[in-house]
Length: 357
Image 1: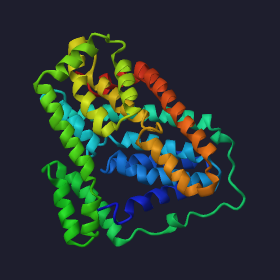
Image 2: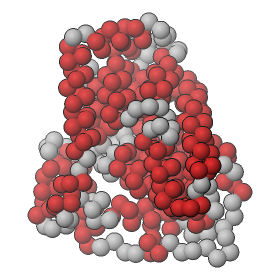
Image 3: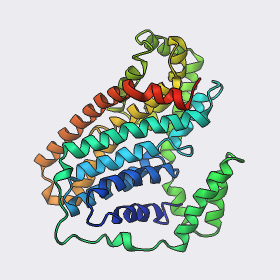
């Protein structure tokens, strides 16, 4: 509903328009915008359709590499994927159920770990693409979208997000209640909103959940957990989980495959190894599932190439497509190496501070 009003897209444009000629602010604001918009509830997949086109369009206009800005927006978006009201975090809640671990402390620890890792990646991307050398053009175009004011319906839709957050404390069907009220008040087109709900993703997550429940009942998860635990030690567990999640994410969906499969395993592996915080392992899975998602064989990377082809049209030749394909593949691999270093350096420390067992 909020997306149908145009509120999220306009918010992204306004955040970027704040930078003006201060180009160094644009990557920072894109990073922040990605986190805010994703954390408002839609999760990562729908926001890709906002952040990637915006990063490419802004990059073309001001002279930044459009691939770099898109990737920085995705980095910011990844931290927001684990706010308490996103589909990704629903998987975490399910994995923590009946474990005795408080989701109220586990989720913030995961958010901090994932956001810090992605901030490191964003800085490295800015350096690698030589973003610091880009200067504002003399006749820089003004972002007309960013100058528009929010409409009454858009403000009401933002109020709906706040109402949902408040109602979550009292009712698990808060989103449905708020949605019903907003649609009854004609804040958005009910037909479009119902059609735009990612029913395929919902069914996929529910279906994978049901399948994994069967696998767990038959001992499959326990067997896989035992095999992986036998290959790890307390000092290498987080790094190994990050590597496993990242490799799986190269060719599959984080939300549909990586998170539902590996989040529940994290608790069991931590218990078998001993001396390791399961929230650190879940943080590694959370970051690993997203860091390779910019591979051209996965959702994010494929979308970057597709949208660049639309924005640049005839200028995006076959040779350039191949170059971007290889770039994204190399960056996805480099992300995984950076993640392994970050998990080794601070994931366990932050998990133990914010979610002590």
